Length: 232
Ligand SMILES: N[C@@H](CCC(=O)N[C@@H](CS)C(=O)NCC(=O)O)C(=O)O
Image 1 (cartoon, rainbow, N blue to C red):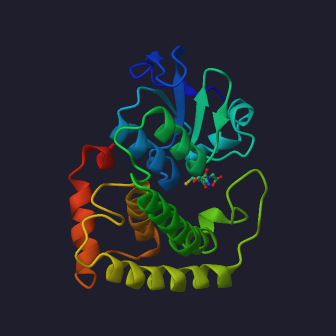
Image 2 (spheres, protein in one colour):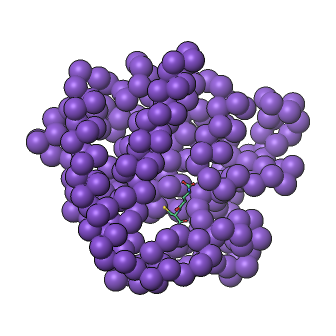
């Protein structure tokens, strides 16, 4: 199965970090929440790149061609032309923050950086992962695909139900935190906002939606929606 390269965005760029011509290839899938996080970071920082869609609907993440890029068979992945491949949002965010420092998305001061890392952990473990459990352990289309990656795992319905409870609890915790705040940490957008917003959008697939019952969350989310990167 041949992967499709977006020729329009195939741009050679000069890397600020290594002062040489560098092409960044972003393996993306427009419908999935995890690559969306990378897509927003790339857009916020204005990082030139070429993107390749990996169609999860047809199982392209398991193709030999994509496995040779990312043996974990997950999306996103970022390939640098020195051969390095970054296969997780955590590493991708660090790399892009170092090579494209403006605007900072991981905090400015020591305390902000610590708060961003803390919120990232809260969101990953208290929201994104439970959300993945809720979806993957309940949806018939995910039969034997309860976890992403190269191995098949059977669904555990009880884990799906627990995931839903955790998602409900996160909605409450987050609503309290966002009282009087425009962003999760400090006065600027950070990767914590990006991770949370992508997960809130994804939560619609299990029927969990931001509503008038969570006005602080609704206001925060409406603010983010104004940014072109969030529609990218
Ligand atoms: N830890 C990874 C998670 C990536 C991940 O789980 N991606 C999903 C799409 S949202 C995936 O590749 N799923 C492949 C599958 O379900 O087979 C990251 O955040 O970068």
